[in-house]
Every structure is written in structure tokens, then in C-alpha cells.
Length: 519
Image 1 (cartoon, rainbow, N blue to C red):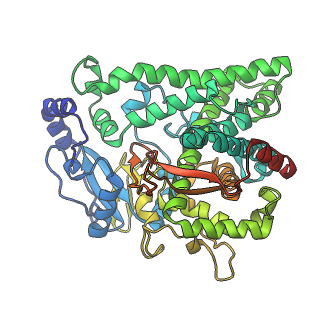
Image 2 (cartoon, one colour):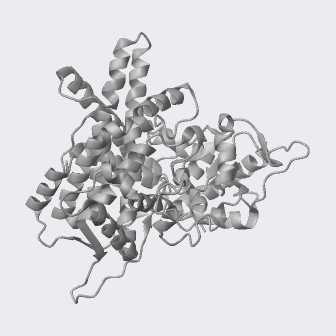
Image 3 (tube, one colour):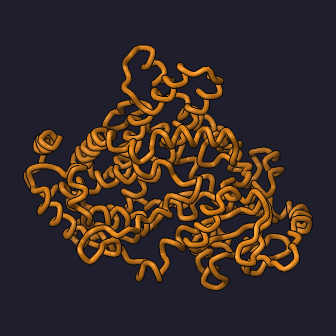
């Protein structure tokens, strides 16, 4: 059902029907002898299987197709070959073991329109991408994360103060928290605890681009880039109307913090961070300094965008499930008290002693994966997998939703149950839900930083606060009907809740003291 597509956009589709028919006809892949395309849903001559997709939750449609057709599903969407992968095993076979052929991204017309074609996560496979990837990996490799613990702990403590003073602004606090960690690590920028202008502007740019780059809209304009030549005032051209604003905001979110760090380096007022580390190396090298500096700038902005969205959305999920599953919250709180006590906050030194908190973090990432369809890959050359032909240039969609809700691996997958990540002796299993971070050469390089930040925030929030249903004027609990913002990522729509200190005598001074003795 394509009810989410505007009437104006539907009209544009109708106007493009002849071009679509020709494209579909000439784009039919010619199969080598002895192979066949993977099975898939019925395909209309003009639209392919587009009308069968629920655009509000395409990952659910794809999972249903997987139940009917198998782990590898072939479909055409507007003349473009698409393979949906519903199995973690298949994803690893193709995207990791054959990464040389599946590390590309599809060409999307909206990337240039929105001014995000420089983003490492969306960039096509190239020498420019490899350079950016190397820069990011050097800064966020696993062994580089422990020295960042003081920064993460400090930002978690600021989050606690914000939650105590303004509990109903919790979505903004999560954005500020995740953004401030990245800004400090990447740019040595110390954000204001609340309403920091640089973080709010960068977050607004990110939110707007995520909202507008809905999968169905991206698919339409990428299939018919000529539609982008139409005037912005025409019905269905909202994308073109908002693109100048998005492009400007995205450019500012890249340029402004980078300029801050450069000025700070000249004045000697910034500490070591991702940008300073790489710019100092650049000064000592004899290479192309201009292109290298651009690569550092683009890599830094990519790190902010990827890290902020994932952590903030996961923390929204955390609050939601603590209210929906109060027994999990109380068990976690009891375990924290038994290990840490009540005279200080949990620290990273307690991490190995609190595996249940690690299990909660993993389950938050699995229960509602922030990127349910990951970010699409593309095949560089044609390939054959288990007798199935995958044409050159095919869009490869890893359905993380299906993998995270695989009933064989995760029984009662729709239920939030951290115990699924614990061994009988209470230690963490080897399942780190690594698939939520992507696959192969495209795996998220910031995953170790994100996991550590999430652990710190979850442990400290549970130590200080109780999360419960809000009550109406009559004292009755307000039931939560969870809804999610859609787009490239999903996160819960803000819901009414009660966030109160576990210690009835906890005030700002008491919390500040608790933070002080925990450092």
C-alpha cells in the first residue's frame, strides 16, 4: 500500500508511466545459462512490486516476503533490480565473504540534491571512500575507545542533571547527550549542557534529511532523476522545495565545527581529538593537503551524523521498554545496587560486573533496530549465489528487522527480553547483535564508541531514576501506545511518562555530589 505517497507524487508517477515501461522493458536482466533469479513477489510491468510494499514499514513487508519466498528475495522497483536479504547468514556470505563485490552503494539522485553525497556512509565505493573510511577507523577502532571513557562519563553525568531538572524534555536530552559525546571526541568542542546552538543546528539538519529521505521517495526520484528538473512549486515536489534548506544546513553542520577546531588549533585552545590528530599528521606529510583536509572534514561530519542518531534513538527505545517491562527495570536496578551500592554512580570499571546492563543494551538494539533496512549495498559485478543470479548493479537491501526478529534465533522476538543475551551462569553470550551495525567493509566504524556510551547512560539512568507510566488528573495511569517516526531510521514518537529520582531526597545538589564522588 502506497498511501503514504502524496497525491502530487502519484500524479508525477502517472506522468512518467511511459518512461517507466520502457525502462522496465530494457532493464530486464539477461540470465546466463543454468541460473535463475531468486524467487520474489509478482511484478507488474510498470511498477514492479512497488504497490505491494507498505511504505510506512517496508521492512515488515520484506520479512513477510522472506517467509513466503526465502532468505533471498528478488523484486523490481521502478525498473531497478533489488535483492532483499532476510537472513544474517546470507548477509555475511555476500556482504562480508564477497565484500569486494558488494561494498558499493546504489546511485541515489537524492544524495546530491540534499548535499549529502560527501557522507562516508552514503558514498559509492571509491578511493575517496576508502580514504574517509581509513580516517574514521583509525579514530574509532576498538583499542582507541577506553581512553575516551572520561569524556563519555562526563557527558552521561550531564544527561543525569538534565533529566533531573527537565524530565519531560527527555528526547532533547538524548540528542544533546549523543551529540555532545561526538562533538567532544571528534572536534574537541565542549557543548553547553542544554540548548547548545551548534549541536541543535547539526541535529536539525540530520533530522530533516532523515525525514525527507523516505525509502519510497528516494526510490522514485532515483528511478526517474528527470523528475528533479520539474519546478519545485508543482504538486509532489516537496523534496525539491526543502532541499535547499537541507543542503545549507548539512553544509553548515560540516563546516562550522571543523572551523571551530581549526581556529582552536591555531590558538592552542583545543585538546586532542579526531580532527586535530589527523590535521597534525597532515602537516607532517608531503601529500595533497587540500584533498586530505577535505577528507578529514567529511569524515568528521559523517561521524557526528551516524553516532548521534543511533545513540539517541536507542535511548528512546530504552526508556520505552523500561516502562513497558517494569520487571526488567527493577531487576537491573537491584543488580546495580548489589554491585555499586547507593553512594556512587556506576562507572566503566563496573561493566564486567554488570552483564545484565550489557544485555539490556543489546536487546534495545535488537528489539527495534535503528536502521531497520541498514543502508543499501550494490553489486559491482553480476554474481551467482546458490544457483541464483544477481545482476550487476543490483540494489542489495539487508533487512535487519527480519534478522533481529528471527524466531529461530530469538524466540518470542517481539518481546523485550535481555535474558536472551545471558548464559546460564549470568555472563554475556557471544551474540553481540553485530548485524545492527552493518556488514563487511560497510560496518559502522563507530560501533564500539556507541556501545560504550549506551552502557554508561543506561547504567547511570537506572541507578538514579525510576521510569513509569504518567498519570492523568484523576491519578489513573496513561497507557502507552508506541508509535515510531519513519524514514531511513526509526525512533519512538515521544510518549507521556514519569521520570522521578529513586531517592525521594535527590535534588540538584545531591546529584552533583553523587557525580563528584563517582569521578
